[in-house]
Image (cartoon, rainbow, N blue to C red; front, side, top):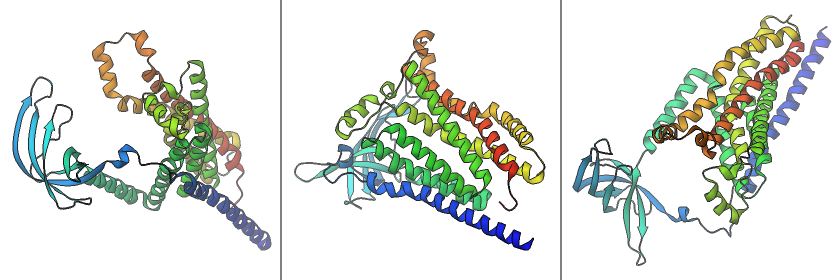
Length: 393
C-alpha cells in the first residue's frame, strides 16, 4: 500500500510539473511577443501628440482676474480670464517661473488659486523662446492615492489571494496595452489576436489566483467558452444588421491613422465585446467552480449529475444580477448621452437604429449572453472533472 501511495504521489508531482511548464509558456509567450510588437520601427517619425511638451507646475500667484459667475449656463461657475504665475515642477525647464493667461469657459474651466498644482503645455517659438498654456488640473496625486488605497484594501482583505489578483490584473493590463493594441496598429488581424490575448490573460489570471487544480481548469474552460459565445453572438448580429468597427464613433480617426500603419477596424466591434465581457465572465466562472469544488470536497460521494444540478442552482442565483452587469456598465458610461436623448426627445424609430445605441446595446447583450452561458459550461465541466478527482489532486 505504501508503495502504491508513493507512486501516486510521484505521478501527481510529475503531472503538476508538466502543468507548471505549460502554464509558464502561456504566461511568458505574450511577454516575449512584446519584443516584436511593442516597439515602433526606427523609421517611424514622432507623432504630433508626442511632439507636444507638458509639465507639472505650481501656481505661485494669481496676479489678476476678471471672472464672473455664469448663472445662465454654467451653474454659477466662474468664467473669464486670470493672469497667473506658475513655477515649473518637471521637464527641462524645471523651477523656472512663467506667466500665462488662463481662459475659463463653462466647459474648459481650470479655476486656480495660489498653491494649486496644474499641468501646462509648453510651446516653443522659432527663435527658441517658449511660453506656457494652461492645460488642466494635476490629478496624478489623487489618482495615485486612490490606486494605493485600492491595492492596500485588496491586500488587506485578500492576503496572498489579493496579491495574486493584483499580479493577474497587472499581467492583463500589460498584455492589452503593450501586446494587443500594438499588434492591431501594425496590421495583425484583430479578431485572432484578441481571442489569443483574452484566452491567455484569462488562463494566466486564474492560474495565478488558484494555481494548478481542477477548479482552475473548470473555471478556465468556462471562461473561454463564455467569452467565445459572446464574441460569436456579436459577430453574427453584426453581420445581420450590419454593424462593425466602421460604425463606431472613432472610426474616422482610426481610418486616417490606419491608412499609414495597416490598422484594420472591421472586427473591432467583436474585439470590444471580448474584452468587456472577460472580467464578468471570469467572475462567474470562478464563483461556480469554487462552489462545486467545496461541495465535492465536503461530500465526495456526489455523482456527476448531482454536482451539475448543484452548480446550475448556484449559477441561477447569480444570473439575475450578473445578466445586468454589462447593461448597467453601458448605462453608467453613457449616462450623459441618455440624458441628451431625453432632452432632444428623439423618436423611438430613429433612436433604436442609431449606430451608437445599437453598438452599445449589442455589446451589452452579447456580453450578458456570454455570462449566462458560462453557468452551464462551468457546471458541466465541474461535473465531468471534479466528480472523479483522484486523492491528492
